[in-house]
Length: 149
Image (cartoon, rainbow, N blue to C red; front, side, top):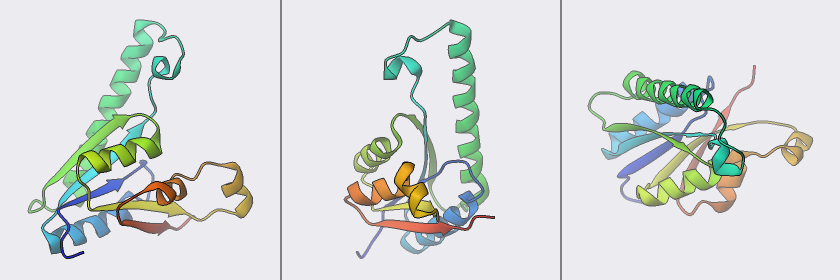
């Protein structure tokens, strides 16, 4: 790999965002790459087969999505230097499939994600997004260990 044009950082609004963004910014400066900061939001209930519910519920959900997108834009502004192109993306859907689809669509050269250290039993019973991505991704992926307090 001689060059990186597009770097994607998949975030989930926890304390590790800063750690992930440090790596993204450093690599983006070195390769003059664009950074895409992606958060995958839960799909709307009608998307997964439930009734959509009253309009006021949909309005509340829409406001939550707008607020999450504003947070992503702030992350780009606060953690990525002005000399680096960066864009915030908030997309609804299944986390793993959405990350993979967006990475392909945007021609991402490197995916950066955080990984939590959990027990074997926890990993067995819970979906681990980073591990699922690692199994399915077709591009280089940088996993950053997130220290638990």
